[in-house]
Length: 290
Image (cartoon, rainbow, N blue to C red):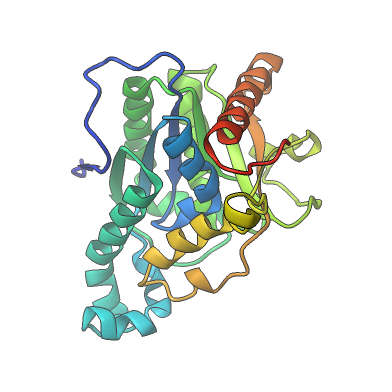
């Protein structure tokens, strides 16, 4: 069995004691940098709602070597050569991921070290490359120990990366086995709502209203600040992936409830978002009513 790497990024383990009303969030992603899709929400939750956020990264993102041209001078390695990039990017991208996690206020990052073989839109191909039994087992252990209030993955649309879909698929499976009542949300960035085709295991979720975290909300001095700054900061940390900071940065983070599709789960996540909005109005100058 692969050795799981666990790094403590922010604070210390709470010795089993969690403050009343302190939400616990798990993010499951295929690659370092996928958390950029929900970076604004995560930053707001950890820094203003006192949330505990953990991230599980299934692969080390070594298949991203083609985008490392600018990072070759930074890291003094010819990373765009397949064999060299795949040998060194796991170490480099883990370091970048930990830096991003510190920025976002993440408590713990779990690295599962599965192989990032290539870009594909096929979830089935990705699942054949990963040791899915081990990944599912590790996710079950993390969920069981974490006692989370909400879990996040990327929305499994038909046109997204197969690894993104596979990560969310295995998250849903693990949650169903260990904590069936755990709300699992899928995130998609965009400037407006639009119709997208979903993978069969998430069919129909897009027909329900999403929860929205608006990155364009302006606040602070002269209302010149927006949450897009956080997304840009997070993207810039992933220096080995030269495309990340180029944008454009989507205006909103849309969150659809993937499971369980129950009224109680919907109420739970709506309450969490509502509490966060109220906290932001209290904590941030010139924050608008929403």
